[in-house]
Image (cartoon, rainbow, N blue to C red; front, side, top):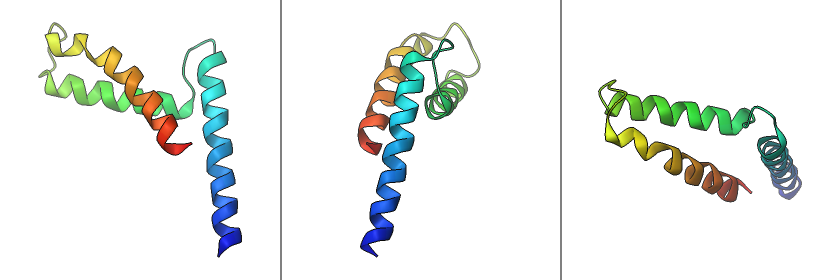
Length: 77
């Protein structure tokens, strides 16, 4: 049991480190985990804004998105 938990922890840590490095050094700006998180949050925010691109709620999504991605790295790591 302890070996299984250790191996799972190592795998999760390696995936998180890879994703953090790919996010920081990627020319397009996001890796697989950060990209999925950001797409879901933008879609959710757009639905809340009633598909109105001029809604003031969408102005705060970018900063919130950055904080959520960093927090997700911290929580996973």
